[in-house]
Image 1 (cartoon, each protein chain N blue to C red):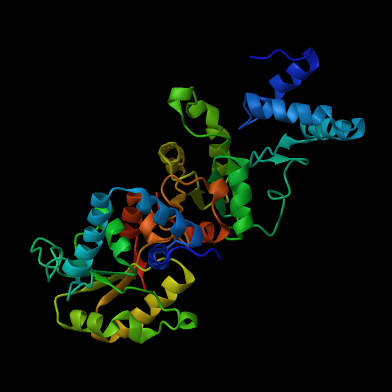
Image 2: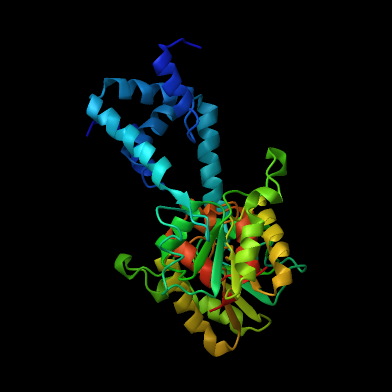
Length: 199
Length: 199
């Protein structure tokens, strides 16, 4: 490995902690920053600090927010009877962006991954249980990803909530809209045939 | 455009008729062939001729076959009560590969595309109607792609078959298995939420 000036190496160490940033990308980003005007570098640093200072996790849905409870949780027009459970804040954003869900959310901040040491205790399940036990929620949509980890997590969360008597559901698996059957994987084709609906 | 020797240009003209082959790819393929031993070129030509000579469309399912009816249509172990309608032979192959369907098929060889001059008469609908009217089929799964053209085609085919009193269905739309919600398109997310099933 090459040796860089201390400050540059320290920046690269920090950058490498970002998702998808390895040695090469970290070096490219760092050298880019070195060449920018001081004002631009300061603005970036300030924005990063700001995030650290101003964002907290909503005490209800666990999504990052500047005000607690977050705008979604305190919005009186949202359906308080439906709760959508997702793995990460980015999943919540995707579902919001689809406009198909008008209820409330809960962010697990992870999936069950025993091999990586993520067990049931790490998924804020007790917070979720309390939220559902508190009352108004009638249906919990377990919108974890349709992956091995996501399915296992949905089952685990479901078993946790089943004693509360709420309806538990899972988004449909099938062909993504616009897909070409020729290129779909066999498992998805099987699921879409098993779940076929009337025309 | 460059001018090539007659035989080479004639080969490129033929190659360009293949799907996904434009001027550059045709030239690359043609120059590749020019450099190969005569035996290899002859083997390719023979294989192409063989396809033209030996393959016909199955008179029942319309899939290319060397024997009519094709092995699928003449297989007594296939479920004769379910018929799966697809756009192209490659779609049939994908569904077979998934192992999720044990019934019979019908290949439309296209989708409704009025702008490209493909109307109802081009889709072998009369052959399909006869096949269904002949009797044993109870359910027709309209497995055209979940695209605008595929959906329109499924509706058209459905209306054609509805008077025959068979059950009509469509494969489920939803999240492909293994998908990441963060990167799914809004329409697919909407469909997967609308079609959610009990956990």
